[in-house]
Image (tube, rainbow over all chains, first blue to last red; front, side):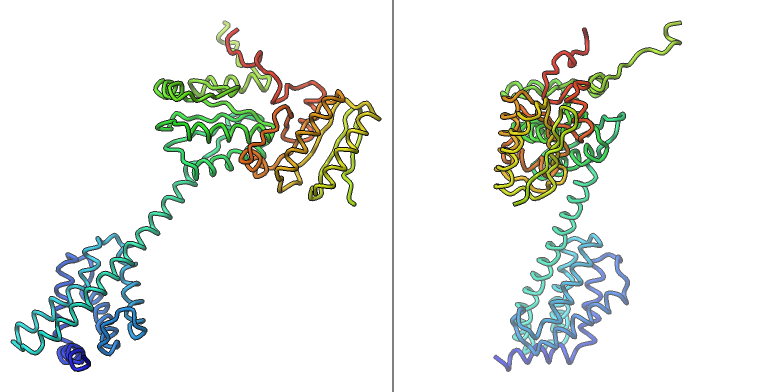
Length: 280
Length: 132
């Protein structure tokens, strides 16, 4: 065992520069010039040194590969953030096999092929490790984007003194409704508004769950001492709501925002009249 | 034991809850309040809960009960200054305080009691008509 594993370490050590040159070339070819020669050569030399520091162990999780793992994790994270594909990321490691194989073919050293088999297994595991880190990073990026989208999509706008509106766009799920509800209630308290208009023109579909969320928001607003009007109900949505048997109870609904605005104004004791010019 | 002070403003009783509402304090408040309504002949009760960060189901029910008791004694209850987080909690608990009027602050609560403004829970059907 130690004899064989010693072999691939020695194989790499003896041909270090040759392997590195072949490796760098293959990796650069696959990245199609998106990374400079010195940059990739520098990265790969570090990876190769860390690999040799493992003393020929074939267990990727062993402590002797700590340095190598953190190096590859960092590399995967950078690639993921830069928008490289998983293949392009993993090929950095897998290309080592090709480089060594090319070397063996050139030298015709049969003894090296047995050592290569061990190296091959190790490289496969390292490649998988890279892909794992890559996808974990990608998921983090997606989660961050979803969160910022959540914050962006809940603007509470003031329409008039004492009247705020919440235009909802997209799909309403539990997490989003929670954010929406909190934003609206906070705005009601901060501005001292007694009327809120929830406009659902941009909501793709209303099912029982979405309706439930809307009702809860309205009830919470009532507890604060504010009244909600739901506006922007499109014909298809009105039909769905009736078909599903959803009861909005005593909550006022309006077809569009302007009707809702007018109702809110009247409830605040204001009226809209034509100016003197119109009366002639 | 702490007691919640009940202040009289004209024919309105103002209860401002500034302490953490323990169960025994809440029960004492209910007793005191009904006694004061009878003694003063108050027509309205304002319960200011703006300082309350946490409301559990017991306190929620106690507010409902107090409102019901006041109504029997011919005094209307308005709960004012509820925090958004508290409102969300009550809705999640299924306590919508039906029959209790609410207002954003004491000023608006007084206005409701003075009859200058239509309350939120009041039957506002007439106001809802856009075309008449």
